[in-house]
Amino acid sequence: MKWVKRILLALVALFALFYLVTRPEDAANAVQGAVAAVWGGVEAVGRFFTSLASA
Image (cartoon, rainbow, N blue to C red; front, top):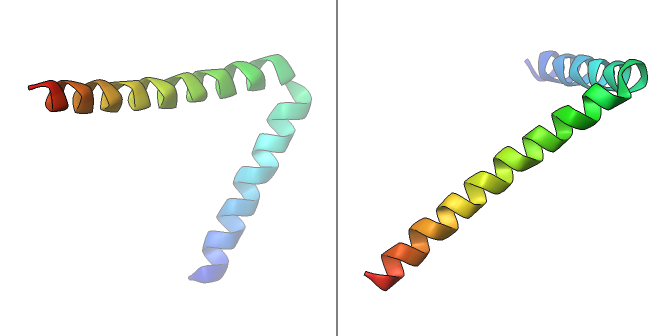
């Protein structure tokens, strides 16, 4: 089962590399979108704890 996980991880990495080489602008937009989503989640958690502490 460990080898299946390694193969899948290698395939995902190869696809990401292929996508980066063939469509760099789209890859950059995808990364920016992912970072924005994570940052939005971090901000939401921060607002939650801020409002929890002020209550």
